[in-house]
Image 1 (cartoon, one colour):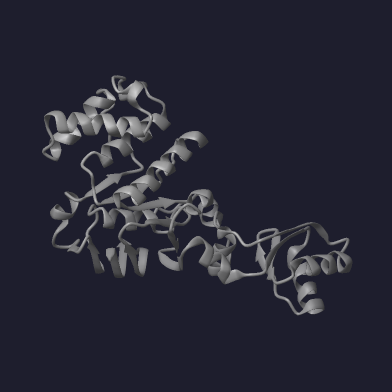
Image 2 (cartoon, rainbow, N blue to C red):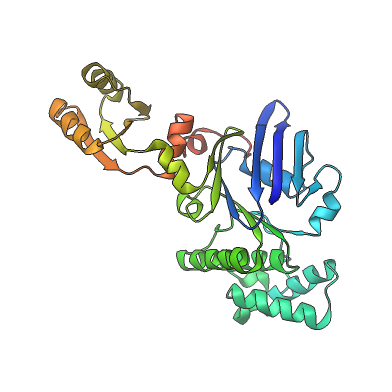
Length: 315
């Protein structure tokens, strides 16, 4: 069964195209990750799925409802945690959850039980009476997620959920998300720019410059590359790339000051390259394909290149 269906979705801010004919489906009961650099389109897509942005072009359905015509009904069935804080900083953690529960018609013992459960699951029981203003960024993030889960949504949308969390808290969060998926059947969608986090998803959609460039499980995406990945540093990478092509018939990818080569039996090529160009290669590394290698193979540039070289509005 399908939880989210996106068909030919495009969205523009003035002349800038943030999403360009994006099409994919998210199955019920899976953890789906939207992976991409800043400006790739993740946030815009997240806002459309959470009904905050209108559908400009294309079609989007969430839990069998058309986002363009049934946004109010969809909001009753989804939980959302945004990257920007939504807690009232003057209230305590518990007071924030009480007010959230009232918005969904929850009262009395049922509301109190749900609050206690969410706070316990997210390690916030001992801070329930602390004002939000007194909490660290990581604890505030956990409170945001507890707020989004209070009404038992069928679909949970999390925008960069690990922001501000230390490694231990990040591990606990993902353990909780996996429990929600396996024990409660909740469909979970996360946006992320963290490769480690993306590896924990059941499936991924890679977004770059508004386009969906790859779709599949982490293992499936890595398998598309196959072989080994060599990363070569040189003082004159362009010249070395030309010489490698002339000598071995291979065309390396030029990424800044480094060259990238994907090849089966990469260790053999590594030895041949070092023997052929000992004075031109400053360093070389060999590894199995990673999700970043998948991104490079699909886009022709590094994952962080867009973030480092652009001051555009985040997409």
